[in-house]
Image (cartoon, rainbow over all chains, first blue to last red; front, side):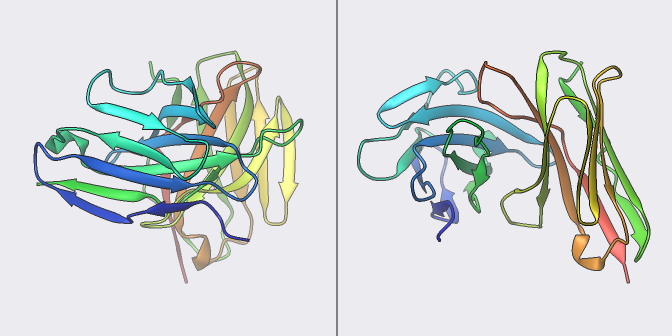
Length: 115
Length: 112
């Protein structure tokens, strides 16, 4: 039973390039969450998506960041024109979200380094 | 004031010790409380999940929530070197956003 999968595990980009981070939720899970972990900081919520819908994007920076979770395929977190401050670990979590079961299970993360 | 405060440590204990990890929170709307364990360079793994006040025990781990003082704790009995990790407390509201609000995490080292 595969867990949450994220790829790539490590991503290096130069300033101004685009970064695309992918997340495949656990089998049967249709709810996906993205969190960011800056060095020496806790995890910070970014966005919550269901299939084809953004439910809560209150933690997303207003510019350069976008997320999607299409009907088919993984969820994508896209960062345009990356800056050094975007260097962080990005974690995806998924949940089943049925009555009584809303545990968020985390993937291994993508570590983004911006040069 | 941060929504969830957690002493980052580091905390170093000998094998077999009882470990106490703590968080405080400011938002009285938080109803669900979790502890995640995160090994270095890995994703967080859920350890304990509690609703409202009270205690919950699972093996060597006990989670405690005191809503009157907005204080949450995780106790680890008979600590093992394999418990060495960063422990993150997390909370969320009931019926509102599904987002988890995390503490900064406490780094624990259990020495053999």
